[in-house]
Amino acid sequence: HVSRTFDYVATPVKCAADGADGRGTATLPPTSGAVEDAIAYEESAIADALHGCGACELEVDRVCMAPSGCLLLCFKDVRGNVQSIRERLRDKAIGSSKRQNETVHCTLARMFPKPGSSPLDAETIRAITMMCARVTSALRGARFTAQHAVYCVEERYGCVDGKRCRIKL
Image (spheres, one colour):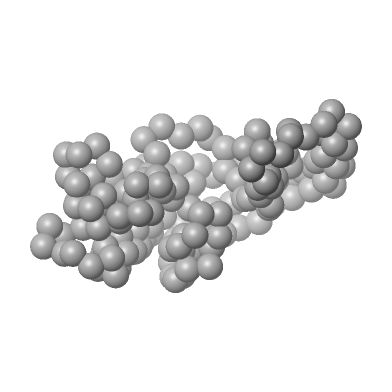
């Protein structure tokens, strides 16, 4: 998953041509102007960066609710492959974070409060925390190996319903 700024979502061709810092980037050929060209070029650059990285072995660490309202399944990167992938992507994809922590996660759910609604009360927060602890206890230490990454165009914030491409690691 490569996080996008709202500016990128609104104008991917301009951001790809100008670069997030305004100094330009190699993510998009300078003569391109179509959104489809920007996406195809980025997909190709990401596939190239991931080629030969090798499978990622992940171990479940915990389930937690982030302050943003995301329910996260967090992993440990057993062999360090995810860090290698992040380093390779850093210069290949618009929106790649230049500074990342070591957390690897999967978003299980997102809570989008209605505008003007009040924050969760203490009892609800306590119930969510207890549920996270129970699930963590059941899953902690479970391992799996990811052989592929999925490049997905996030056409709507918080949804992964856009074009997808499976990339072998």
